[in-house]
Image (tube, rainbow, N blue to C red):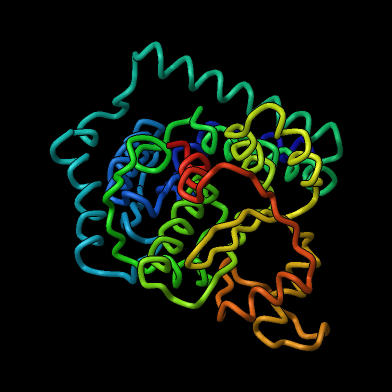
Length: 328
């Protein structure tokens, strides 16, 4: 059976019937300065063609937050048409043939992928090493989150070259509450800070007597803490760092007058959300949304009852804290 499978896998004639379909990645999409997604999709679609894809699917640039619409759908459709008709990528068999750079990267990618496949087989196959592989993916993703949050990895319009006067075509509060909002993307930790900031200043301008708690992240709370610590004087850092144990969640409590960084255990946040939404029984399945909003007295009392800890810093305004967290 093993030899038969090997012959099946390496049979050259089978490659003639193999079709490759590619689609643009949601991982790279952003909600901030979202028209830049058109450029990201262009490079991704071009890469797919250069990589040998037979068919390519391009997502609308506003798919993260907008309902399907004719405008963004037409742009997405015309993007692949433009690459085919105006850039003539469909006019030759292999547009990247002969490129030393592309050929070298392709060879490196193939060798490393084959090495990974062999390691998996030696360890007993995918079913046995699935947990290990997922942990490796999580590690890489967390490292990417960290580089983007610190500005080492540039995402145009999000963590660098930001549009300070950007007006959102969506409502940040509704988006953060939506169960369909993709929180696994590379830029999510950076975006949620910007969106939470927008909500804070909008609430302050309206002098609303409501408040909100925004869940800034689970895997990224250490990144947020490190960014926060960088704005402090050296003598202020040890005490703040020690007060934020690992395994906790970072939260941003926002009222018309102030925005305060806090931390809580996952269990505290779960009970807190149930209290806000009046879901009494622990047996009922409940996944808390990213954004919790209520009248200010209710949230203030809930924060006090459930024991959330604050990271207080003297001598810094809310604006300075939020600007620093966003790398301004």
